[in-house]
Amino acid sequence: MNIVLVGMQWGDEGKGKVIDILSRKVDYIVRYQGGNNAGHTVVVGKQQYIFHLIPSGILHPGKICCIGNGVVIDPGVLLGELNDLRNNGIDFSRRFKVSTLAHLIMPYHKNLDQLRERRRKNKIGTTGRGIGPCYADKINRCGIRMIDLLNPGLFKDKLKDNLKEKNEIFKKVYQHPGFSFQKIYAEYLGYGKLFAPYICNTAALLNKAVRDKKDILLEGAQGTFLDIDFGTYPFVTSSSTISGGSCIGTGISPDKINKIIGVCKAYTTRVGEGPFPTEFAAEFGKIMRDKGNEFGATTGRPRRCGWFDAVIAKESVMLNGISELAIMKMDVLDGLDKVKICTSYKYKGKIFREFPGDLTVLSKAAPVYKQMPGWPNQRNKPRSFKQLHPNARAYLLELQKLLGVKITMVSVGSARKDTIFI
Ligand code: IMP
Image 1 (cartoon, rainbow, N blue to C red):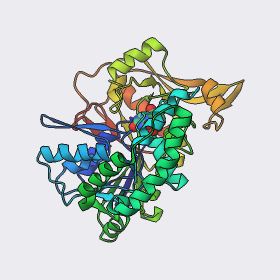
Image 2 (image 1 turned 135 degrees about the horizontal axis):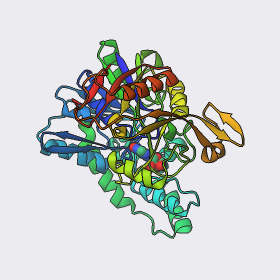
Image 3 (image 1 turned 120 degrees about the vertical axis):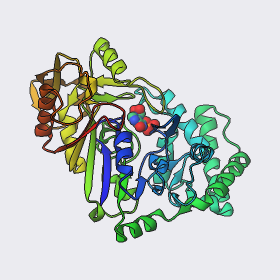
């Protein structure tokens, strides 16, 4: 069984917890897009791990974890994660694989990301990790890939070519001194030596796994509305975050995907700039942010919070071909006298039941809500759908009806046991 897991909102849906649960049941776990703009924290006993690149499944013995060709890699961050694992006695030597074709984030990508953002009138709210400029070089056909680090002559030519153009831009446009060839060359060749045992043709490896009837989990980073094509452009990330991206980012063909699990919060959050129709007013937003501990795992930035938006979630079901839903952080809504679900938008007297392609509509539209009775704080964590308060059950059934997809998992707390399987 090959499963794709995607975020249905603007990222931070709680995918990490579902990935952790599913990782135990599969043989291979693969990242297919994004880079170290993503991040999740896993606690094992007293030890805390923060992963930005390596699938957290690496903590489960025997699981093979891959970084696919669609991911952009900051080698310093990858090395840090590998060192952390090694220092904690986790043997990954035969279980960690990284694609020859994955593109590398270079020092100039990070600077360019930050310099561009500073000059933008409409800021995107980028994490500043060099993700966008690295993907831009990939599309411009001047990117540097993992495999290049194993060929010093080729790497030298590519880096020289890049620096010739980029240093001129840095100096003339940004009044930045530019970058030294020698320093980057030496540093990155060093990474190449360290990563050599893990660099391989992951597409071939994964397709063999498919033929051998192994189970594969393809884990998406970020969320559907940060997708470069279908998201709230330009306030998006630079990769294909939707389920289709899993094929492009791994080399597994679409006919091999058996199930697509969509993960969304029982409400909505967003980090960075961009339209967010159901965003709470400031005061209530702060209460909910504190209650849900809505601060970014990568940058620590406070997340914007709002009611569940069924318009975007329905669009997400369509774009991703969602076959099952996991609803996360349901407990954060405990203790409210009423809860709301946005079922359409109203703009200039017109009702939009579908996601409007025009960002102006999305930015200015008023959400139309279905209001439902809330439920009290639960003294004991519910362990089954039946044990949920009847109003909470009604809320979930309403989401299921609006989205037309079955909910198979509801999370009511951060611990693994606080998960209801339906
Ligand atoms: P970038 O991908 O770092 O350039 O950021 C572009 C936009 O995507 C910004 O609004 C970020 O806040 C957002 N973003 C990137 N990665 C994540 C994530 O993992 N979770 C939530 N938002 C993200």
